[in-house]
Length: 366
Image (cartoon, rainbow, N blue to C red; front, side):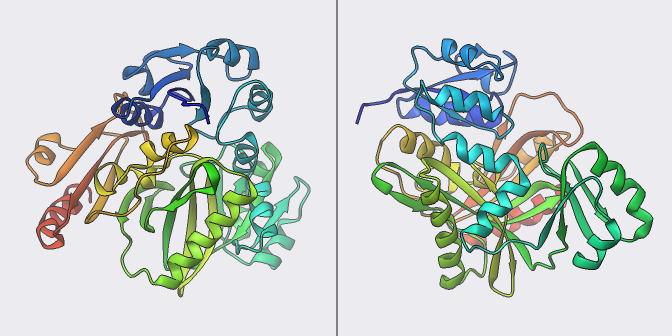
């Protein structure tokens, strides 16, 4: 297999930034292909401006690159499909197409015999009374596309919410989901390389605020062998069916030791940021290894890690700098409501030493 060393990353956010930084360390150059030369990814590596909707723009900008990858789902599928006919692209566009549409994503997962939350497709003319009879109050309406970090979602708790719900249905194609009474949310970050080489990071327990990931604990506590086996089996089935290459993240709801899929993310993922400090090989390095044809690194957790996102505004940095066992990552972004401005990871192999640090962090972020 060719020795790929120069990778174009479609998307210029913090995931591109961390891919570029880890790539530089192992001799893989990442070139950010994006809209804004001031963006988080563009601050740390070579930047080339492209029009994502124009395949020729992407191909021209990537003429000297060995292959392409992407760090976000919000890219035009038709454009990437055309690009993939002329340039190696991992993951393949089909994974992007499914992840972009909640209906297609759920239908695909369900077709593989993997549990999902009960759902319904919602045409604009649907009777919300019938939806309520099928799914029961409260149920969740989600736009099929352009939904992330809690966007494009509306809880329908009673008939009093029907007017607002109908307005959403008219504006965008939607689905409805039954409320899932889960015990917790967990995610699995896996990586698939050449020759079907597979590796899985430990399950991570996630806490969200207003639909945005706030805290991840790795490894997740109280994970049985059976639970991890289910998660890794589901993720592997999805990856193999898509002939996937690179890092793939599956978000799950857990209830009484059983899992159902919430979402698929065909990319490196926020819930895997802890791997920079807490795993044998980070998700970013492993993604580049996988798509460039290198052997995969160890996904084993080294000690305990807890990651906190900085959402909307920066926390008191002097307090954070004073804490031991804490690593800060700033993304070089301007403050804005709900924007991910950075994260920290508290990490140590001795949980007893880490516990007082976590207690202080919980107080700071409360």
